[in-house]
Length: 454
Image 1 (cartoon, rainbow, N blue to C red):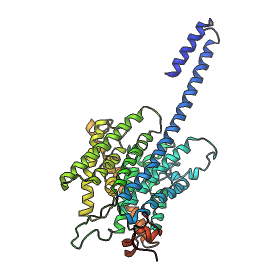
Image 2 (image 1 turned 90 degrees about the horizontal axis):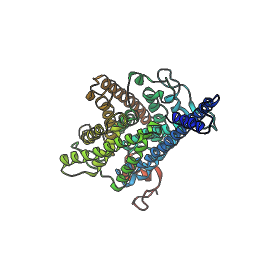
Image 3 (image 1 turned 45 degrees about the horizontal axis):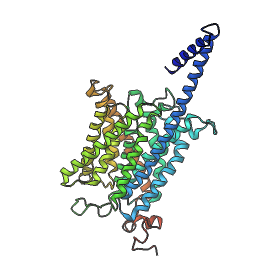
Image 4 (image 1 turned 30 degrees about the vertical axis):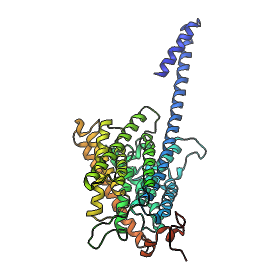
């Protein structure tokens, strides 16, 4: 449209100048149109790069949000350990994803995983290729998947064991599943087996969040509960976090960062961004409200931690369908996620007796699966509630189930392997004393500990 308008303008100018549409005038118009088309295309390409890079920076800032949520929901004696794990999983993840994971996820597929682009081999080291922008955007996603695991395993995990599993998550487990669902995002015609079936996960409810959540579940099971979490009668005991102000700050940072997570997954600077931001925000708001009301009815009090996790549950739930559902549907998706997360936390805590200090399994694993299934219900094109039948819902269920089997199965093997080799859980003495002193020899709050390293 812009090129046609410029071409018409050129004809008018030629006519006014007295030349008219004589020989050569049409060639001049064609040249102007071609130059305009080239300039418009170059401008759009550069805008896409700028927007995707900014979105990547927003998602990176979510690392601070995860750190604050996990620190606030746990005890002061373990704050340094939480912060160090968040720092290291992103640092380690960045290196191993660059060297191995990116190629496994987006390289030319052999039917199971990618086989090229390891360490960006063959790419101009000083170039401005799109692949650099795509790499940093996908790196921050890989870091998110690894960070999710930290919260569920907080307050009793050896630091060296944590470093080992961060390598495997970012180098192998996350990217291989990602190649099944997102393999064609870089190379056209490079779709993985789930993608070929029609599986949809726009920004990663399953690819990022459920994979991280099911790995977290495996880790929490292998570790066992924190000391004092369950009494002799088997009933759970509350272990309050030391700073809900930090946790609330973390939730708001994550909410802010999600405007890069979901709209950024377009990797295109166009009008879709605003619509996806709206669906993202509505789902988060609905999740916070329904979680608050559900917890209020269940416990008699408007629980702040449940409301915070409800907002995150809504964000996780809408991540898969943020680009393909209506704003009204996003409210339903987020609202249902807020209800689910409350009952899921209570179920894991009271029935299965799996100790998850921050509710990571429920928020990311459970609500990630819900968001993936919700596409089959609420998608404007193909959703069951929009007359599309059950096929899409079936494909979405298959993808969610495949994610559980892959991540939980490999997670159990990985954590059991670490447990019986380098070690996974700290000693009882170290856990009681706090991981800050035992693992790092320092405190988050100077003078807080009455113990010393002497």
